[in-house]
Length: 326
Image (cartoon, rainbow, N blue to C red):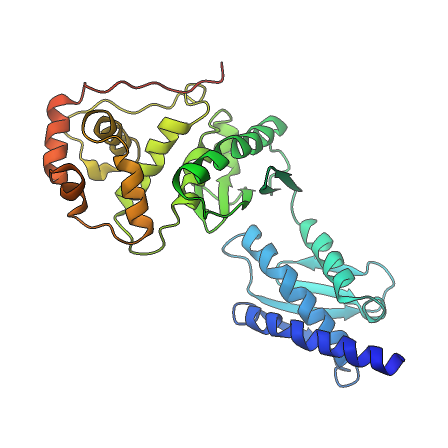
């Protein structure tokens, strides 16, 4: 009976190791085990567990997190697992008697100790994992970032791209010096920026729109992508007044390629004076990689430069209303 159980367990491990091998194309794991010939079963369990846990840790921890991981064994009874970027220590006697799932859980718990806080919340089909590497993050800022996600992201998904992920990761990083950025399903926030601008919660609106956009590479110009994200912040943001955020008035030194708020105001003018729904259509074209320079003329009857010239002449013909929590 024990022999049959062992064979079944080994078959399961071999199957799941295919997943681990795929992960190892991105992440390399070295297990320092002088007795590997007699402990192959333990090493395989560990390898599979690490390759299921470490990629998430690395994604959340940052771009510079080591892709090469070394696992060493310890003989002390405690602790059972110690883990940080690139380094894992495991008690072999403990690992011998644990299932792969329990090893995974222990590894995960060891890795999240590297962060100041970790939480995972679900609401109406949407999930948000929130990691802070800043022990001094204001609890109110954390609460506002989370509540803004659950308030605005479902609306953006339903409005622009219902195939968007429902599982998003927020990381507040002390080493990140810009404002925020989105990559895949992760949004990275600067701890320094959030400390200096605690009311700027609609940075969530802008960045989650990037997740919804999901254009991939070479779909269109950056100014258009960022202009749409800021237009969406203007139209769907929850408290732009509270963050003292607004769209700048037109002047002759501007151009639609200036991106962000300048482009966003141009888009607000287009929506009100040229073609309602234009921005949503452009967003769809970009996602489908169907956008080109002719899109503007096809959709509006005028070239982009002609539209900008018209905007310059009639830029005051736009009504702007900003969201406020008050």
